[in-house]
Length: 459
Image (cartoon, rainbow, N blue to C red):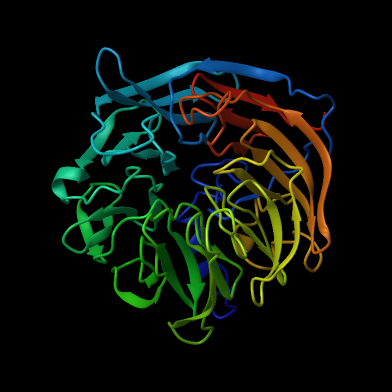
């Protein structure tokens, strides 16, 4: 982080956007407290004691793709029910017992979208409020404690959304007093920012089609920048006003499938999709500009080049990129040019749409030290190009612990967490495509039938 701004700017950018200082052990939004896929909690196991994790509790839910989120001792998740009519639901459970606290249901008939198992976006928790965005664009702000609706929007109607092939999927992002969503509205409303307390629109931006990728907030040239990967471009916006600072064309093919979030290592931004391959962009340090360093795409999904990710977000460390390719192949790439240095299939079977989520573990966290939140100094993740403590959740419902290095993947431990189910994908006995949450020294995961909690505490 820029030293010119010091503690105040760091807190404004990260602790306001995500409640780190108050709840460093929570998992309140997509990919964790700071949206970077890092788990900053100590006192957890280094290896699993058995081949299947013992559950603390199990709660019955319906189908859906959205991963659970955890805040202030509660777990939030969404699902879908189709009988006697089509509805989506937002649930809140006690994190220690799994007891249902509240649930809100609303009519949500799916029209013109594929993969109908349920909502995609995680529930974002911030400042006592819970924000959910459904497949058909239903946006809600709830009182996180009791489920009371504070405000709501039917964005499909209000913004004339050009519905993506697989529905609305991006998780709402909180920045300062704004709630920002990528919905693909028209005209010029790919991204819309609302007052997070009242629901009043504050700005709209971009005429692009919507992707399925959740935006991130980075620091560039001493300013916060909202990085949005649309269906066609990678864009940098002022998160306070929606003003476009820069944009880089991604040149999509026929089927647009940008799902994973952009990844930022302090200087470079990396994106990757199933059909259209990978791109690396450099964000200028001293000005609000960006330029493409390289773009690589294979001739087909089976003859992929560099990295063709499906759902899971890749990981950048040092001079290397680690990610999951189109058929579940784990790959290590040179960041400089995208050249492949190794490939490994041991983390999961070879299947189309292969999905695995990376979570970097940093023992000790930043609790009680908000001035370090999000800073490069705080990220004592590993040495050089290694990621020595990476947790992985694969589509078979297995949790893995290991290391990613320029020489390859080193598995340390593996255990079954939850069974795959077929509503998300009717392939064999199904898949687990929902991102887990790590909080309170536990892991929380869901399939199309249940939400489970398993302890990861060392003691």
